Image (tube, rainbow, N blue to C red):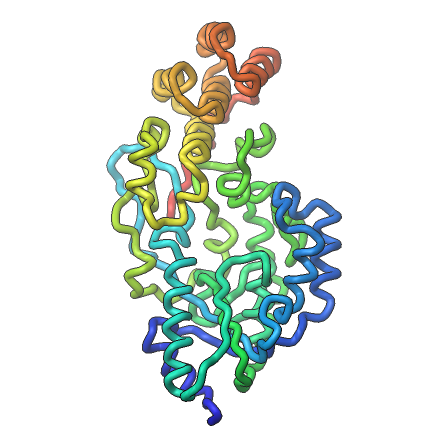
Length: 392
C-alpha cells in the first residue's frame, strides 16, 4: 500500500507535526569531506565528540539505520513575538527563544513516535524506524535542506517559508519508500545581515560558522572560562543567542507559534534576573528549569554567564553583589567571572577587594584569573554601550 504526500501530512498534523518534508536515505555527497575539513580547521574546536569518524557516519544515514529508505524531516515552529522582557527595573539576562519551552528533544521524539505508530496502523505492517533530534549522528540541516523543508541561510540555519529559522528540527528514518519532496532554491541573495550582525564575528563567511566564537557555544557547550576577548561581546545573553535570526528578513515576518510546548511558563524561562542566577541554589536551578533545555548549561555555567552579563551592563550598583559572589559562591567559574565583571565595571574601586580575594582563594583557576586581573585589568566598559540588549 502506497502512502500519498497528503496522507502523510494529515497523519503528521494529527500528532502535532505541522511542518514535514521527505527525502531519501541516500548518502549526502561531499558532506563527510566538508565536515572533516571544518574539523581540521578548528571550526568545531571544543566539541571533541564530533570527530572525523562521526563526520563519516553523519554523511550516510544507513550507518545508523541500515534498512532505511526514507527520511521524514520534521520542524517545530517556536516564534513568540508577543513575549518581551518586563519593564520592571530588574536587570535580566536573555535566553535564546528555542529554549523557552519544554525540552524539544523529548517533544519531537514523542511526536515522531506517535507518527510512526500512525504509519504502522495505516499501512498495516511493522516499520523499522529511528528517531533523531539534534544529534551528531546526522546533520539535521542537511536533511531538512535536501527534503525541501527549507533552505540553508548564510547563518547556517534552515529557513522555512513563513517561519524563518524559528524552527526545531528532527528526523524520522523509515524502512519504507516515501515519495521525496524537492529541495527549495536558496533565497538569501546578496543579503548579509546575519554576518554583519553577529556580535563575536563567529559567522566568518556565508554558510560558515566558527563555533568557538559563537555565543551559543560559549554559553552552553563551553564548560571552562570564557576567553577575555569574547566576554565584552556577549551582551546579556546567558543561554544561547538569537541575533543572527532576529536580523534576518525572512524571520522578521515569521508566523507566531500556537504550540503550548514552546511557551515559557515563567519569566525565568526567557528573561531571568541576573541577581537570581548568581544566587540560585542547585535545587532552585533544577526546579525552575526542569524538562527545559537550559539544564544543559548547568548552574555553574549560568552563574558564569550572568557574571559576564553584569560586567557588560557596567553598573556600579552591582559591585556589592559581585563581591558577594567572589567571596562566597561555591562554583569557581562564578567567582572568577564575577571578579572580571568587577574589574571591568570599576577597577579602581574593586582593586582592594580583589587583592584580598586573592589572599583567600584556594582554587587554581580563580587565582590565575585574579592575578591576571590585577596585573592587566580589562578595558573599562563604555558608558554609552552599557545598556543590555533588549528583545524585539
